[in-house]
Image 1: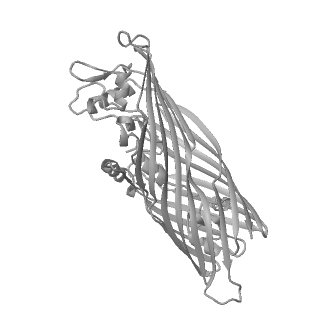
Image 2: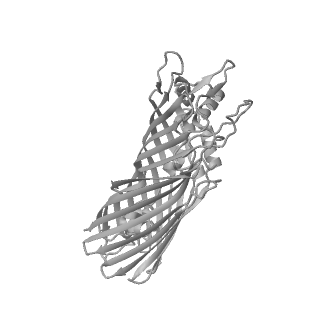
Image 3: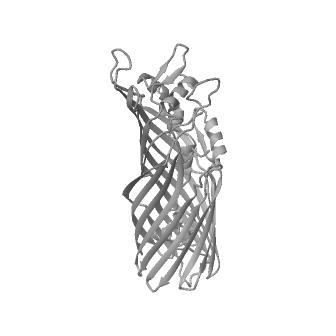
Length: 493
């Protein structure tokens, strides 16, 4: 199952037109596996604020935290993100990076509180609007290598598809046939025209983000028990451009280049409820649950193949062959998994605190839906993905008006069966300055994880007896790191 990875779907997604172009288990994981966000304070704590409260980071974890606000507050955050991908295939290594500026969040919390001498069990309440970036899709990866002679090549894979499914309109095999990358013999059997040993490379560039608007309310009961609820509106835009190419050193074909473009846009809706209990000034306990997010998404896509020859593939044919699919558009629905989080925060007087969270999510419960059937894709989701626990730990030390923070988070591997551990680790640190009506915080978040990817797959031979079946496929192992600096400025009133 190791071919299913965050680096995006393999070229097998181009196998036929319509639904199977892109909508699959990879999309389900991409939009279900969100990262922690919020203010620089909460990110400097490793995102561990389920039990903490009193910070705009509560929008993305536990709306009960709004019940701990004693004054109204406005925050604005800005960030710089540096992403690096180090890929290895057949012993060859390549590194690529991408940087971008972003707005990871802003918020407005309007709080009302009763005076200390005013009667009533409900002491305060707050309403807030928050914007939080859940995923940053800006990334560029690249790899290049020479495949061993006994490994599957792209042209062989296209021939496999033609033998298995025929020349479906807008399919990869149709592209290959129209550009003479594959031919058909007298018995109707398709075979490749490419050389046995090829240098190949691929560049995958993605842009976009996944963001959530939260409309939340929190209240305090006797300053001991805090409750809250929020409505989340998520918007996303994901754009991918992928270019795969091969060079044939001893063939009529000199080189080929396959390019596909995919843009996904849509929105989703979710609900979150939570509570925080403060049995003493030194301890807070928190719990929150989030419903699945119900998305409506639209994919727009296009693919083209260019094949260049050193002699014409047939009389009157051009040396430079090009064929493109018709631009496509497809609308579908995605339901992400339910999430449950629990946490505790322990305060060391006025000197600081330690806080920790654990979050449960079952990625195998993601579901795709449309007018067409997604039965196979949803079964693959169940087979490939698993339950995971996400752990977050943070601490803050206070020195008069200054704050120093550190944190760590471990987001569990969502794959049920993988040769490579694809859990994500986050190392965080931060600082802050607090004044009566103004504060500024900064945080540095470094994350890393592994990913495994194959540009195409090997189809079952069936009753075919050919040398280009049952061959090993290239496997790209990538180490991905991300460095994010966030600054938050806030005002109390």
